Image: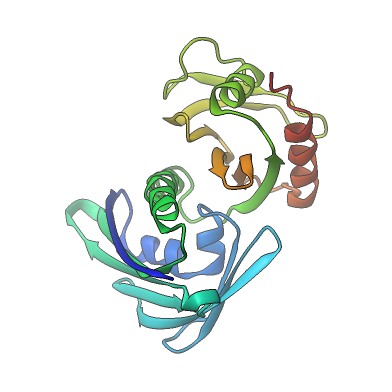
Length: 252
């Protein structure tokens, strides 16, 4: 039986309301900081979609007030489960903006685990949104995803990821992070998110790299969800290279 829920989040962003609107209410904007791929048709009553790992969810736009309010609701799934999202944008002095999120709907039988995962997940994605608007304003990022099913327990996964980036000792924000992957330009950046054992982020001059450890009923999965901003990027080639990298990552 489904379980009704509501969750609220807010964040202050170093961006104008118009910049925030572009980031949350357009496909290219959402793809620059959130997982998967999103398509949005402007206007209340219009349709949109969200695709991740080969699965697409359809949605209907239920609120469309540019630079003020954006809302949508997913089509109902099994057991009438659905998600409704409402974004509220409030401009502040000196060009900053407060963004408020209200997420509600119906979750499935394993609702407590799903709810906890959403709480942690939104912390990461809202921080990624802040990084996008601060470091890559006005640019569109190409999303790149890769997966390592059966990755193992968090400690071993993060030891392997940190080692690959040349990070020794505790993983902390601001630590230098360097990595070379065959077929891709060298990565030279800093850790900008460190919330282990759940997620790790690295920022460079032309990308946001995100690594997430997800424990599910089917086992532990290491999820890579990156956003590339370089003008000469090749997302398909990058996705293949990252998938090969994470598949070969030596997790002890």
